[in-house]
Image (cartoon, rainbow over all chains, first blue to last red):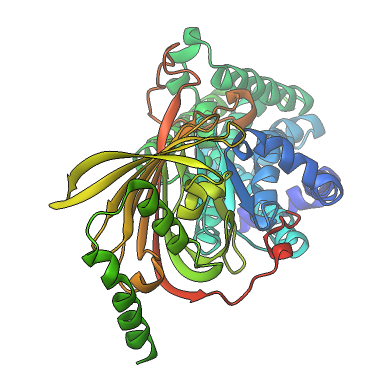
Amino acid sequence: MTLLRIELKKIFRRPRTYIAFAIVAALAGIIQLALLVDGQSFVAFAMQGLEEQFAFSGKILNGYLVTYIILQTLLVNVPQLVAIVAADEVSGEAASGTLRLLLTKPISRTRLIVTKYLASVIYTLLLLVWLAVIGLGLSLLLFGTGDMINMRSEEVVFLLQNDLLWRYAAAFGFAALSMACIAALSMLLSIFAENSIGPIIATMGIVLFLTVISTLGLPFFETLKPWLFTTHTIAWKGFFSDPVPYNAIFQSGGVLLVYTVLFLAATVYFFRRKDIQS
Amino acid sequence: MKKSLLTLCCSLALLPVSWAGSLAPADLYQTLRNRVFTVKDYKADVVMNIRVSFMKIPQLRGKLYFKSPDKLKLVREGGLSILPHRTANMSLAGLLPVGHVTVIDAGNEEIDGKSLRVLKVVPESDAGDIVLTKLWVDEDRMLILRSETTTRDNGTFLMNLRFGNFIAYALPDEIQLQMDVKDYKMPKGVTMDYEGNAIPEKVTTESKGRRKKGTINIHYNSYEINTGIDDAFFKEKKK
């Protein structure tokens, strides 16, 4: 517990930690501002295929829809913000020359890695709570409540406003699991580097590359897609389907959990064998 | 008490029609049309079920406002409302051709164990969207129980009506409207769908862009009739 507290202090003493919170606030804020100013034309564009046949009345652009748009946009970028801290956990210590000193303390390497990982996960959770406050809280305040129209590629899901808060709670919960997986990947890459830039960029590169493969609808990638963790990090969207595909979401959660454990186990394995020189 | 008296009066008013035997097709159509158009407007508490292949919509409760012949608006407190774009086709008044028409007697058909008179109504003018309306009429009660309207640009509308508490005004307790809907599609790169373990459906050239059926069920719980609703009320508010 003391070790975890020390690791958290280290994370929250670094200015770069707060950059992520500032970026989340800035991105969410700019989306909210853009939708406040020009949301009607955005809605008109998105709904044009539907409005040929159906007439909608009421507040389509409400806080719930704005939050969904923010999450759709930001949850692609949040992994990069998670990497800023998680990828720095070991490599940052190596760069500043404190890693060897740290390992002279009577703490096992496994315990150190697990604690550092837990500290990264706590940071990730706080980042998501911040996203919930800024994304959901502020959007509801600015745009009000209402029913939500979730437009998928081949279907439109109409969700009643009293049926939405639990979906967001579940979506944020699932996003936490996804980000914990990204944090584990960053940690793994972190132990091979002597400075944090390399693992941060490597994490971003891997996530970006696999996301492109996961989202491309090319048949060539179809067999590969179920095995990529990036295919499953967007499973939070499943909570906005009707009925909710619980089986698929649990399956995706399972895949992410397996990847997280594998990344963490590999981190522990390689870190225990690592010759620490700085 | 008032309602019972009204029902009795209307029933008595219809008796001569029942006793008069079968009316000529044109007269029958005119009588039905006049009856439908006695309702100038109404507000009704409704429960709506919309089933369209590409839409997942829960049961909607709200107030449905109607003004003859073709204005319709659903209002849900604090929520979104959805109605087919051509709301005219959601009321019987909107499905009956306007102006001069040719009414053809198409014999009798049995529906739910009841023999109904079938009329085919063809508008004489080409100006409107309606090409042909087929009506299934319960002559004893002077009610239209089913209508099938073929339009020029919007496919075919089939409406089944069930009458009960509001029969005096020829207003249904429940309607079921079946209509043609066009397919809907958005690029996957935009929506970034989560497909889970679902196998993506293959889109064939036959299925692409074809019309599909959609149904709307409206259950009317109560009506407030001919209270007067301003036209401005039906104008679309900003989203």
